[in-house]
Each structure stands twice: as C-alpha cells, then as structure tokens.
Image (cartoon, rainbow, N blue to C red; front, side, top):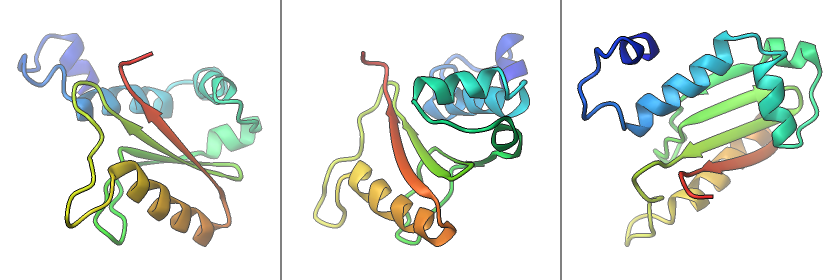
Length: 130
C-alpha cells in the first residue's frame, strides 16, 4: 500500500484510513534497517532491546484474540509483547451492553497472550492528539 500511496494510486477516501496508516508505518519499521528505525521507536518508548532482538522482532498485524478483539499491531521483541492500538479520526471503542471498553479488552487479552509466551506486556495507544 505504501508504494500505491506514494504514486497517488489510492482512492482519496483510503488515504486517511487508520488501517492503511498502520500498515504503512509498521511495515516501514518491519522492512527498514531495524537497528536504526525500530531502535529509535524503542528508545522513545524507553524499551531496552539488543540489536539481535531488533532483527528477530516479530510483527503481527491485526491479530484476533479469543474474545474477538483485534488490536492493530503486536510486536514481539526480546522479552516484550507490545500491543499497539492506533486511532486517527475515530475514537477508541466504548463500553456497550455486550462489551467492555476497547483498551480494557486489549489490555486484558494482550496481557493473557503475553503471559502464554512468558513476555512482559506493554500497551501503546497512538492518537493524532498530543
């Protein structure tokens, strides 16, 4: 999608899609020189990992948890299981009569998955707001 966007081949309504933005940003981090760009993100998050951890990091796009919750990206890196949820124009899902708040579900299910892998859980919410 990144190349299509650069060449102006995406429909205008797709350009502001959170999923396209997530795909572009995290695909760049996945395929670029990780010891530079992914390292920079980890440093900003104050997460210490080795070069080997960076190069072996696993990116999981839109995983589905047991309860049906679908976060944007999970990054398994070193001893960490980092769940990213990005919002651009929309809000986080609010509690309904059948489901709890989106971030609460993602924290609960992400922590469970991290535990299965013996990893430390971190939730990162990304918004357009400062």
